[in-house]
Length: 133
View 1 (cartoon, rainbow, N blue to C red):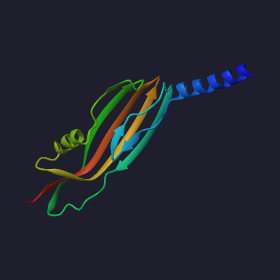
View 2: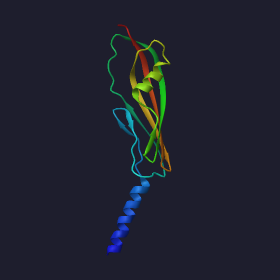
View 3: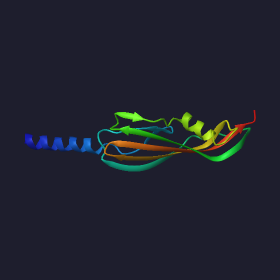
View 4: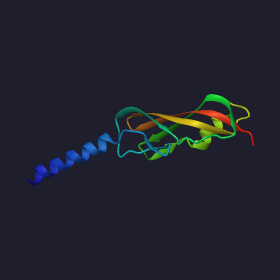
């Protein structure tokens, strides 16, 4: 009886450690790299829209400005990259000279994981605007 309980417990522990968590976690549009243990292979996509606001007294400078950033994680122990909103916003505003803000912001996430090396590519698409004030 003890051997069978030990075997079942070992099988459950091995399945938890070997599968890990597949998925791109988001929190208010920001990426969260999560996972427990080694994930041998996964690939997925997700998206999010930031809450919209009425851009009053503003003119559209350029539609569909895009910015991309990449995050890497090795066994969830070593994380590299910057996909913060401010970094993506600055890159998107470079495409629309004179624009000061973004509206209609959409975030797309694509994650791939091979043998515990997790890569998340974040793409932000928005409309660049300039306030008249």
